[in-house]
Image (tube, rainbow, N blue to C red; front, side):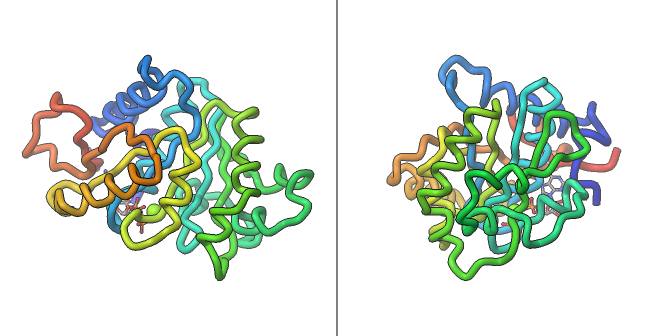
Length: 229
Ligand SMILES: Nc1ncnc2c1ncn2[C@@H]1O[C@H](COP(=O)(O)OP(=O)(O)OP(=O)(O)O)[C@@H](O)[C@H]1O
Ligand SMILES: [Mg+2]
């Protein structure tokens, strides 16, 4: 399965919708200073990583300097999505336990084949993902990256059941919630929304993912499903 339709099928309905999401997130007047964005969903498999990867490319194509952080320290997959060959020990979890991170953090930033787009893969599976993500070091890393990049996208684990995402969301400017069409209940979505809001996260919007084009009128907004055309 091709995980980057934004490149392979740039004029598909999916790619058009992702570009609209990009514009809404970064360039609407309400979100003037938005740089650090977390993408999450209630449950596993709703399309967080897929959406984040394509959104990152869409920002880069627009000329923004973008870095994607794979914050799913339990089962990160962005390295695979971008087909980057790096050692498992060269990722975010390893960076966050490296005492010399201030001088060495650039070694963990990997170039992708897409101009303007870099990636920090998730790294080795750590025993304490939530603690690493809650660390002051992670705050400081984000502060450094803010000075160097226009857009910082954080691919998160699911919000329901794990503490990791709440910890990450509290450090970001906005959070985008993904929900899989006809799959996740409104109650669960609402639960995630409330949990995020309780820690002060600003939810910029909800993307309904994997809507069947046959059932839906595209002009109702961010509804899409990528399909071979
Ligand atoms: N809009 C879409 N069109 C086609 N395939 C999609 C779409 N969204 C997601 N997928 C596919 O669904 C699968 C799950 O997506 P993804 O890995 O992005 O979910 P996730 O929410 O990040 O899951 P996890 O919680 O396990 O990290 C992937 O194989 C991906 O290719
Ligand atoms: Mg994922």
